[in-house]
Amino acid sequence: MAITTLLFLFTTMVVLAVVPGPGVLAVVARSMASGFSHGIVTTIGIITADFIFILLAIYGLSAAAEVLGELFSIVSYMGGAYLIWLGYSLCATKAESLDIEVLDEPSWYANYFAGLLITLSNPKAILFYAGFFPAFLDLSTLEGLDVLAIMTVTTFAIGGTMLTYAYLASHVKTVFQSKETEKKINLVAGIVMLLTGVFLLIKA
Image (cartoon, rainbow, N blue to C red; front, side, top):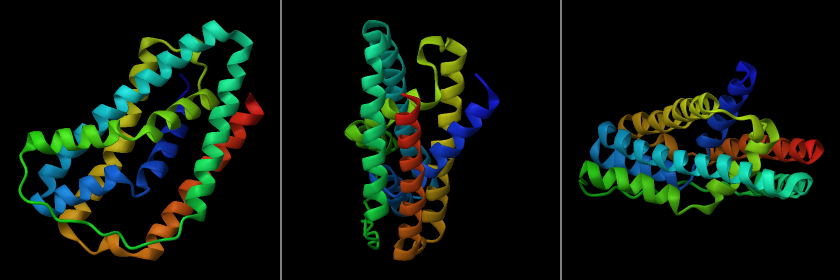
């Protein structure tokens, strides 16, 4: 896999991971309640769930491509349309200050499974991967090392972003309460999704 492709995947994943969502709020809440170390464990749970979604997206789409042949372009069109809709929704979302509930002291096991289950219960995650990967990866030619590279990029991109949130939450609790900051984050992420969806439709 080309280095440029990995760099693009990394950049895009970072931009999208920055958007405040259930995973971010879980990491922030755990870090504010119990400290940075608990935010780390929650992040590990989130990354584990993302690995599961990535494997399902890669190998599930690869199998579909072999069975459907040229009809597989329909999946690409659906993925592109979904990303465009998701991007538009983010751009149109009104900023609201985040109401973060401080939790009682949880165990590390509770933190891990909180991150894991919150991400697994979010169907938008696998739909995103299913729509995103075909735009930039030839799923029929992916090898084991390519999948490992994607996992590594995901770890640094999503994990690094979540750990940044965790660190900030454990030190500066008011940083997440800015409506203007949330609005800018949603706009940037929405534009990235829109452009990705358009690219996917053109490529299909």
